[in-house]
Amino acid sequence: MNKHFFISSKPYSLGLTALLLWVFCLPVAKSYAMKSESTAKLCQRSPSSCLEKVNIELTQVQPKSRIWFSLMQFKLSSLFILQHSDELYQETKRWIDEEDLPIPFQVTLYMYYAKSLLSHGDLVEGKRYIYKAKAQLAIMNEVYPSPIKLIEIANLQMFIGELPEAYESLNALKEKYKNSRNPQFMMELFGHLGHVARQLELHDEALAHWYATVPWSYKYGNEQQIATVHFNLAQAQQHAEQLSLAEKSYLAAIKHAEIALDVVKVSHAKLYLAEIKLQGGDKEQAEELLLAINEELLAPNLLLKLNDLKGEL
Image (cartoon, rainbow, N blue to C red):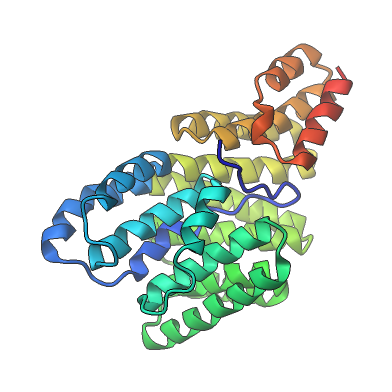
């Protein structure tokens, strides 16, 4: 079984620029563009189905061709979204020393390799590759200005502790593109604002940002992303002691995560929902939720939380 990314003390990162980053790929042949349209739509809707389809298609194309790079963008993004950390680490590690890769693919590679290193506790190397990805993104944005790239730069700033700078740039994007109707861009923008605000302990602002993210996630239509947004909203509501609202948000997260086959998100949402049930004195439902959790999907700190909650039954 693959191990997974766990960031228990922080809200989970959106699939974030995961699916956004495939846009950075070099243009593909027209014949493939028509064929890949269904793949793009599938990957937008379901990372798990995307991964299955892309793994098949990768066996049918020339390695390191334009089509291959496009498919690999989808694969790395899906692995990250689904928190398959071991597989993502191995996939990125095998290409990390290649020198003849397109710059846009290098950005994706550096970013996911860095996050894999960070999840394994290698902070020095992780930050080094974060800076490499950030530098390449900045150069790309000078050549081809894009608000999507600016969101990704802010995301990388989060990982290296440049929180005030990230928050300032994201708020500037919010003002500049306040009339945007692009659901993916707006979902990512407000989601990142929510992440950074929470890390800066601006909890009221974080809550407001997550409320703003919800409708954009539904317009975007990715079930896994809808689940993630509801989970993060629930975390913010739970912190604000809005427990009845948090309960509804966790239930929504579970519903959409099950549709997306995201078993990790289901387990995490059930864990925190059980905590709320216990706080409300409903030990029977809390026990039912806790017994339904696959302990192998929990990081050590969340496993400790699970055992603590079981001790309260």
